[in-house]
Amino acid sequence: MVLTGVLRHYASVLMATAPKKLDAKGMREQRALAHGVTLRSNYHVLSQKAFEQRRETLCAGYESGAYLKEPDRKGQPPANPLTDPGAMDGMMGMMKNNMAMIIPNTLIMSWINAFFSGYVIMKLPFPITIKFKSMLQAGVQTKDMDPRWMSSISWYFLCIFGLQFVYVFLLGSDNAASQMAQQMAAQQMPMNPMGGPGQDPDKQFKTEAENLAVIEHYSVLDDVEERLLQGIKS
Image (cartoon, rainbow, N blue to C red; front, side, top):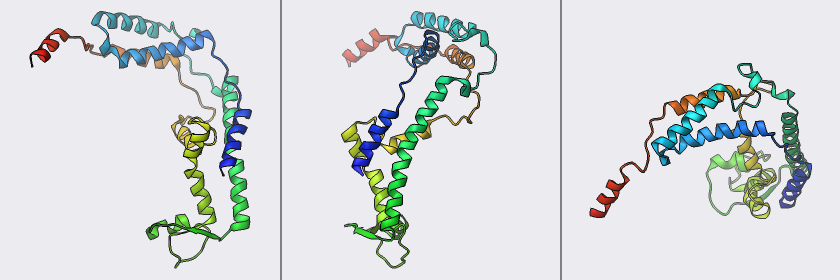
């Protein structure tokens, strides 16, 4: 199991394609939006004047579309991501990683079912309740067996989830063999329909401009002298 995970990791590394670099306008579009989010999250460390200057500059750029990658498409519906070659390359790389994970697991599970179906291979050294019987005795159709006994296919699934920390120790936290990390990443992906329109940068900029406009500024340095003197007196 460990060797299979290591081989799967290096197979995914070899099949992975290098991500395409963004052009200057695309990078500016991303950084401008990130700048607004950072200002909204950390405005309290700035003075009133510094915050007002930054807010006015960003809001003016957001409203005018100065930071857009394609200013000519302002107000138009976003393009289909399937027409973007970069997006297609990303989906192809994701498909390769999924195939490198699914194929070895399917082959091993089929091999276990073919040669060790119905086998009981170990007994847990601690007592468990009857609710774990269906999980630990998959493929064994018995009603009176102690739930501590584990079937071969259940042991295989237990190894899959239990070896995640071994893979992290051997290959690092960002490894292709860690299926748990891939499942978490898949759950955090946006649930846009395949072929549907992407996010509109112009709407994102206008939303961020509204978020910045409603901020009531305060600074951690307000009345810092009085608070310092009160702390010394107390």
